[in-house]
Every structure is written in C-alpha cells, then in structure tokens.
Image 1 (cartoon, rainbow, N blue to C red):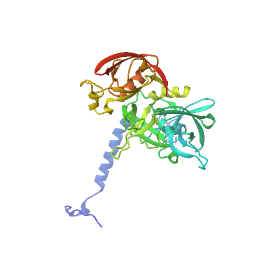
Image 2 (tube, rainbow, N blue to C red):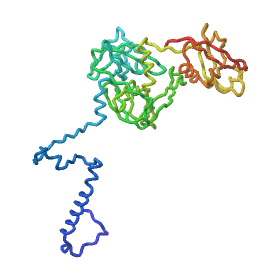
Image 3 (spheres, rainbow, N blue to C red):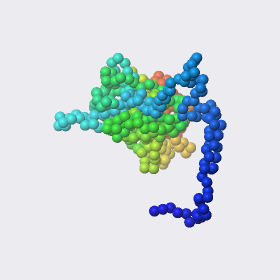
Length: 400
C-alpha cells in the first residue's frame, strides 16, 4: 500500500532541476557552522571525546606524532556502583514459629529483611523491624549467597518498630556504613534493597527519591483499631513491598539512611513508602545492642483518650466542664506507682503535662517518652469531679 497526499501538485519537469548546486551549498554551510562552533564546544567540555592540539600530539624535541590512545568508556552508573558496594550487607530475616513433635519441620511464619550495620571479632549485628521478628521462636538470617544461619534476638522496640539480631561473624565479610538522615533533601535520589515477597526475590533493588521528610504516621500497636503511637518517618517513592520491611534505604554514597518499614497499600495509592530515619534509629539500636531493652519513664497508668468514649459520658460519667473536649482519662492505676503516689485516681482526666497540652494518648506518650527521663519530676494538670487540679509525680523506669 502506498501513501499519498491529495494536496500534492505534480512537478512540471523534474529533469530540469539540478541537485548538485543545493548539495554543495549545504555542505559548505554545515562545515562552516562546525568550524565556528568547535572552540566553544571544546571549552564547555560538551564533546564526547577529548581534543588535543598538534603540540600536545608531538613528543618533545621530535616532530613525529605520539601513538594513538585508546579511550575506554565506563558505562557503569553510580547506582550499580552503590549496589555492588552494599548488597552483601542487606540480608533476609526468617521468622520461624513453633516446633512440634507431630510437625516434621519448622514452618516459616514469614520473611523480612535486615541490614548488617556492625561487626566485631565475634559477631555481626543486624537491624530489622520489630514486626518482622514478632512472635518468633527461632530466627534465621539468609545471606546473599543463599546460606541461612541461626540468629539471636538481642531485643526489639515495638514503638519504633526496630529489632537487633546478631549472627556469627565468620559468615559475614563487611557491614554497611551508617549515614545521617537529618540533612536529607526532598528530591534526593535513594535506593531501597530488600527481599520483597520472600527470599526468592532477595537482594531486589528499587530506585526513587526522598518524597518527604518528618512525615507522621499513626501506629496501631495493639491492633484494636485505635492509633497508639505516631512514628516520624521518611517518605520515598522507591518501591517497598511486603518482605522489604527491615531492609535498607541508601543514599548515593552507599550509606544507610533509613530502615524500610511500611507502605500505604491502597488501590488508589502508588509509590508511598516509609522508612525509619537512621538518626532516630541509632540510639534505639545502641540500647538494644547494649542490654536488649529500652528503658523509658513510667507513670503506672492505663490511659484512654476521651475520643474513645461517647461525648455524652464526658459530662455524665466524668463530670467534665463543657469546654473540656480533649484529654486522657485514667482507666486503671497500679498500686504504689508514680501516679498512685502522686494522688491520681481512676477516671481522673489529664489535660496537661508540664507545659504541654494533652489531647489524647499519643500526646501523653510522646511527652513522656521524648521529653522526660526516669527519675524526673512531672507536673500533671487534671480534672476530677468537674474540678481542675494539679499534682507533681516523680517518674520511675520501665523496661520495654
């Protein structure tokens, strides 16, 4: 089938037109343009090769030209260099639950990812997520060559979703370098490495950018449908899928800047993943590595947000004034706890700690865990039977 144009007019006598003159003029003009533009292109270093003048091509004291040099072009990108540098430090973490006489072998309850962040003469240390190792009776680490080695859990923290394991150092060649997350810039390129959908895809690499910093994501730790904690995370569009949890978020210098933790899994959402900033994770990792636990200040209460009960009960059951619409009521108080010794009672409603307003349980925990230390005093402003009161408690310590 041919192509045609209804608006094309036939030429009267094509043989009379000469092709030589237009061609010659075009060649001359093209050569002139190249000649005039060449110095500027060389100066701007825009040519794909290096230009040398005749003086540089002759040996000193000899007019004969130097031998022709072979130019090798390295097609490796920075991404491939970074992946090659760090890939051995990103491992799989296997959660094994239960071993029964009637079961022939242990069952893998799930797999996630981990990052080897430190080595000494005896052990290699792996950071992962708490939800990856939760409920495990045994843990194994799957190395890049497929070898699976037993791992010992040193400790974990559900609030920051971090866990620290260790394995025999004989199986490991190197650890990843730790970077900093404080100075990250939105739009900065990053790489995520992990084991999405299981160990068969271990070492999978995805690339993206930093989509946002200091994002606040609610966490339902007890799975009751209510948020118990707010995590501050890095947002990235690098693909993070089930199994990537605990894997590495890496900058272009090959440094660990985040521990991949979660993503928004909705049909209408694409490319929103979250990572725990390394600057937030590092002190938690150090505590877990040191003694396997996180020590936090302790009040000795069971707090509930006012929003968890019908507003009708605010005035009828708690006798709150109409202007009090936020706060935390105390469902239970442990005997001889700091709260008990400070005179607090069941159904007291806390509205302020020190100089910080308290709107819900998350506000209470954030002030307690981020601003206070065991042994410190804390001012508590609360309502009881419609009356506003104040007390001071001395916080004790609790291990998590």
